[in-house]
Image 1 (cartoon, rainbow, N blue to C red):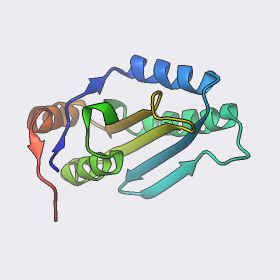
Image 2 (image 1 turned 90 degrees about the vertical axis):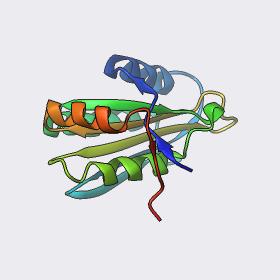
Image 3 (image 1 turned 180 degrees about the vertical axis):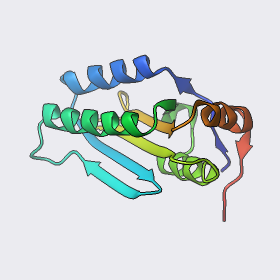
Length: 149
């Protein structure tokens, strides 16, 4: 399946949605994955971890990402649109941004424990330079990106 970078949401909308999801009564399993030239970091919402603790860790990682790369494009992935898997979008974003310096790709998944009706999956593509973000959007948004096999 080709990857298509198409459904962007604003930073404010992303943070409001994260806040609403993590502050509500709905039960989630959560995963955060960060990949950059420095390596990979993964955070999962363990069974003993409270929502506030997971939210604090996610906030800290996103703050660190902002400090390193302030120009973001955020894509929302949804199952009802039959979007490619979040991991596939993340991997494609990282592969396509290898020509840009200091890119960080973050995926956040909040998956409902009972059903998928309130799932939240976001892919943050974060750049050090605004012109890299603009170039990425012009080159790849709305255009099919073939799988790399």
